[in-house]
Length: 138
Image (cartoon, rainbow, N blue to C red):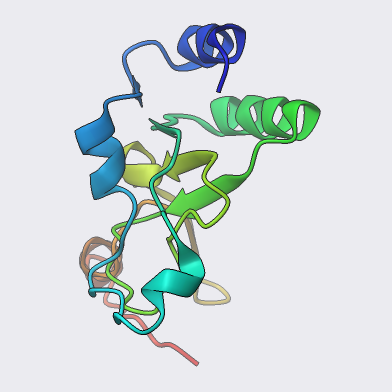
């Protein structure tokens, strides 16, 4: 990633961006260890940068920026999957949704909830419990 691209990202995300090698390594895996037999086929999964958007507007700006510069984005919640879903196979940018973890809307008439991508199931279930509801996954 060239210096100009890094500067553009820094302007978008200020102190919510990391180019630190150790931190990037932490974002290069999920909860489970990659099976040794598969690792040679995948190669390095260390992203070039990690960003933490706080708003939908920032996320839209990032997606537009990535499309313009042909940079891969890998979304990441809490990385509790053990199936490789959060692995940045194309390097690029890991989008950590840790800061976007709020309940946006609860519709009691049709029993639906809209939450930001970083909200964990436990917190969502707690919020629903305040209204006498619980999670039901289909």
